[in-house]
Length: 179
Image 1 (cartoon, helix red, strand yellow):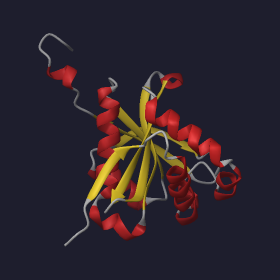
Image 2: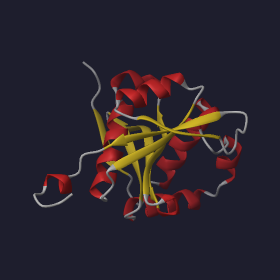
Image 3: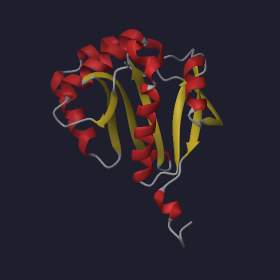
Image 4: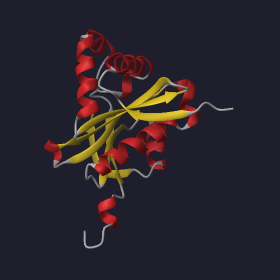
């Protein structure tokens, strides 16, 4: 029997869970994020509480948590970047290695994408490190494709990343008389 997986938006009181998952992700895959483990460990625990509260209640940013048998096992962030013409992004995806084979990453990205679509986004973007072929294949399998944009990663200037986009279907597109 395989364990059951669920995804829920972070709750305001889950700062400790956010810190636990964020530091676990940085320990396991430090090359994949725009933050170092050292920096994350220096952040006051109350700051993680503030972030959880904001991500639980904001209309422009959210964090989704993956649970297996009730235990936190992954996360993904989602936000609308007003500075980038209102582009919607998923970012900081991480799933505990022990449950990756159960498609938790797919559940997380789909939950974040659905939330972004409900906020009015018709496209969802993700920056993926070029060297991370596993992540590239994962996002391509979910319908993301290259935009042609590339950049050096902010914390790892020697590593390049590619901007991917996924076109999403919104309920507004189903409504007669709308574009």
